[in-house]
Image (cartoon, rainbow, N blue to C red):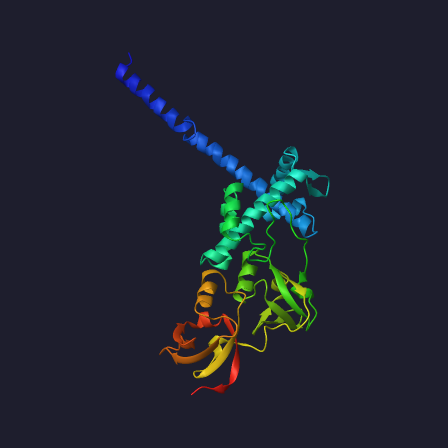
Length: 342
């Protein structure tokens, strides 16, 4: 004969277990289902972004490119394409994947949010450039349209993300794609960087280490099958062709450098110079601080003192003596004076 207390305990334990597993909104089963739904949504949105990017760059996506971008097997990619078709987000035949109007609208919404977050991370945080993409990827799927509009307003409705990609307007308008890979730029032709591809991460890290950013003027000095030597503002950089192919440029008229310049960090003690410009790579809080210190075009700067280890250096700026580290001073382009101050 069963002990009533034991039976009562078993029933109570079963009820508690059922509540833990199946309680609406907070139960483990509900959370698991929400997790699956969120994963499915992320996969769908990432697929839409890839498909739209292919259309925009006039390189239509394929089943193989979709599988490679999302890290899926061929079978999983085919199942995802079928799901997008059932959701009326995609038309597909044997070789072509094309977004429907609804698919294009949803893709542009996610892309707008992603690029707004990248702009925010670049301008308002000290996050390393190599981390912007991953952080934006994480945030884009949980940001509502209302939150995206608030973010855009906070940033002053920027037109481009920090990689040079246009940020779609809320209405879905996007300027047409332009430019050519740096590998195709003729030798000695001046150009401006308009876009830097942020994937794969290892290639982007090399571009970032070279200091190349959208808005920078460049000129190819020479090229070979193994390397491309590039003048970028006041520096020379050497890139492998596979890296240079991820930099998009448009040709411009006139000189490729800022002017006949050097970096403030190159001044010897006692030398004076006039500020020409801040490097394009200097962004966000760091750029605002340098401008607040009076380092605007035309300002005269004199190198006066240097720390025992060679860093920082104290500069005379608008009557004040201000210490700048070498990495800070390297963001400032100057035109040196011929005379040396006493």
